[in-house]
Image (tube, rainbow, N blue to C red; front, side, top):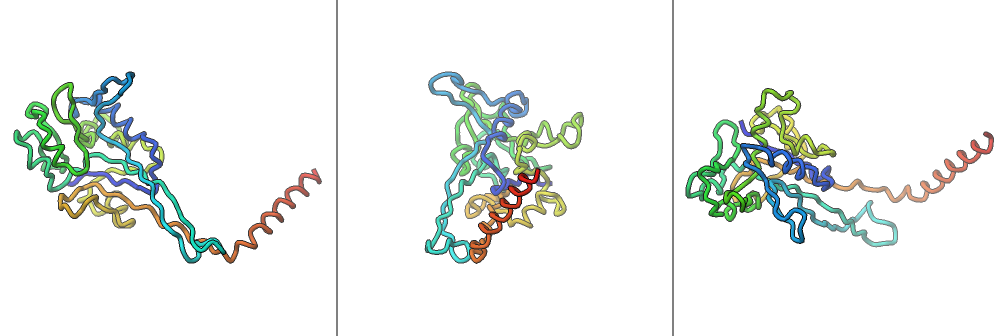
Length: 247
């Protein structure tokens, strides 16, 4: 079994609901150990977050049918929201560099966890992680990270539909999906195959489990229909006005 997330970058609206739900759940989680805030209402608020959302502005030139007649080319700008948390790599360097064995990868499901009893807060794992997925809890002096809500997904006291990470359940756009990548028929496997889901920084060969679905290409617009649209719209508005007059 290889548990992980699929995140649809075409659907994510950057609302941070995943980050907030993660912080709320893990703030009380015995497995995660907490996600404290520092000076939460002060001049320089900070804290530990297992899930953060990065925002990137992407600009590209549209050509061909997507051009506006007479304009030569059109600059298309789009904000890409990229939620980031632990990717539970198959070859996790954060586990390799840990001098105390506090960081480990579970054989039964592939989830990467931290044993706070062994962690000495040396930051080696944070430096080894290229995704910025680990943060130091300065109150406790140990590292914290996403656990895939391991204490929730195996809780048989919860209804089956609720045995998912808090971030997945909270996403209002349904941009996040959880499942077993070793199961070819699972939703995460099917989505990855259908949308050509990608791994982040594959050249490092850490083999991250989580996959990101790239934004879909913008639909082409047939500019040959541009002259007909205003006339059709005027006809429709005129018909509506006539109906109102008759009433």
